[in-house]
Image: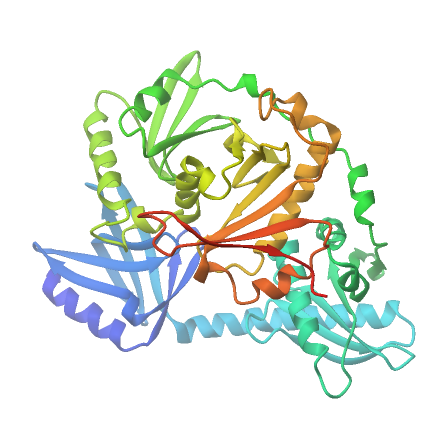
Length: 494
């Protein structure tokens, strides 16, 4: 079939459905409206454009196959160096798949409800259902012998983080408290052993009134069924008994010759991150090159995500073309703001800009010389700074609304505090010879004004007043000219 006829056939089929599911060979899926799909015929070739979590992408269609309204594309770009196979499935078929998943999750919710009834004598089940919006959580209500109703939340998708679980539980409880008939004032969060332990630590960071309303419960499978055990709350002052992991001293980080040469190509736009395997170079926060030392020699790979090539004499011209494309599309006035280079890693882009303009947040801040090498456990803190008075500052950044922002930030605060109290930050010389105060760290939360979630203010007031938190509103066109438009302290209600 010639490309023009193929264009007509594919376009007709795509327009016959309002919604599609994009399936990658890796198993990742992405829901699309028909308006988010483009099929074009240019220069005698067929091109397929689509939106996914990497942004809007355009690929050339090397081959395609239509079978029962399912379209399989073999795609290529970058002179056929990149190849990908994807599938488009109408959401009707995807709905049938979702129905099976929903049934399995509902069955799991009922199993949890049965375990609650078995473990809590006299408990009467009132309701067991899935959360209405996502279907990822079991929402269970039971009545104790005193006729008081208690809510139970559990993740039946097995992918929710402790921060998501806690956020979901708080917002659900807030609604249940407002019910005219049988208002509910307590909620239990059921989770497996590892998640429950992490939830315990987050629970310790809550304000006292919320700590009393929420219980963390560990659920484990035994030969005879499922065992449910309510975990004892941890007081904030007792969190510091945990032994933190050892930090690598700052002097172990030394930039390679290859990294220095690449940074010289665009010093105002390229920065470097050290990690266990070598160095990663970023263009306005977007990782684009990696340096590793193998058998005493430095090796450089370049490319985005999995599409990487080794840099040598044969690929040098290709590398400079790649860098030119980054210069063209990863800029505030990009000619194509749907391009993957513009869309990808926006928070890292904001971090890269703020790192160079950190005094916009506070003129008294000094960034850690190895801020981007620092890891609290396996987590990456966006920026770690020190105020001139010696107070540590944990900086969390967002460029899109994220309900869990506040809990991610205070969990980072907890991990930083573990290291500070153990003296690890001083031993690792995270701030060189600067003195770190013997006072708790402070949290700075920064995002464009419209990127603070609608529930942010409510959720922020569930945090213990012992944790000092400030909100920094940034301008929406931060890529062009970053400004702080408002600063406010986050305090517990009442």
